[in-house]
Image 1: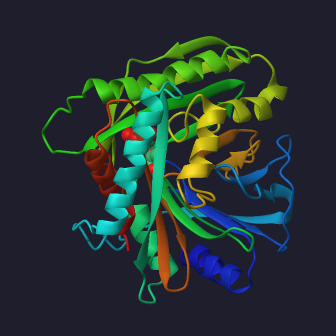
Image 2: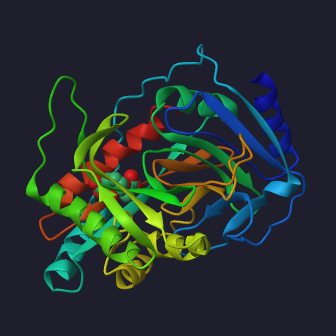
Length: 351
Ligand SMILES: C=C(O[C@H]1C=CC=C(C(=O)O)[C@@H]1O)C(=O)O
């Protein structure tokens, strides 16, 4: 374990790419350390680890055959998070975001879109905080999430604890989820979902089911249910199906990414709208990451990808947190802003 983290630090000092991660519910931590500093083109037929942007930028690939793999069991005695439970409200950020929500609700009501997922970034001073100690807190705070620390000279250093699977493929069986709708988690209370949240999540399910039809058979879905992700809960539908052809992995990924959980509907027009109106570059936030054609622990052929949510880009003195929320015709701008604030607590808690 100590070895894995010292290897992470060494790799960072040498400017060499790596991905260190632990899957939802797993106590195993895996590191894949690339042995050169190059940017390798992504090949969806080869085994490796992928780190893809939302829209603009390079899709990064760590090919399995040029990486050293280390894995270990997670220690039980990790540092507990520092419980920075106070939300931080920047009045300018608040009014800018609310204006963007108002404008976007008008675009939806005007008939251009059914849904738009708007986002923003927040800077947090790090005061020389150590990357490994932040990551250890993340590992222990969010056992149900895909927790990762990724570095590539072209992308920078990223960390996250995402609750959203993009796609898992094992022996031609595909698993994905429709995840949307958010409210604060309250102990001993059953979450009651308003129509706005239910509709927002149904858009995602319907999109996935319609678009996947071309590539899969025997689709199964669960009923929507409440799913906890740290201090918040979402509505989730689990979807599974059989892939008609093992060769369609890349097409399936292109179809799913970006889903209406992070982009909007219709997809292409929503993505263009976000690029023009959000006013910043999402980079790898709401992109996807994970294992392609290779389980780095078992060596088996499997694909296990996650949407890059509840994440941050970590610089020397500052971390940039990325947070977004789904907007429909019924959105209330202030409520949506506070939803992004609640989501930001996932990262703030470990800083
Ligand atoms: C876009 C984000 O979350 C998505 C996933 C779950 C719930 C969401 C929502 O309620 O808006 C978003 O669709 C984010 O965390 O930045």
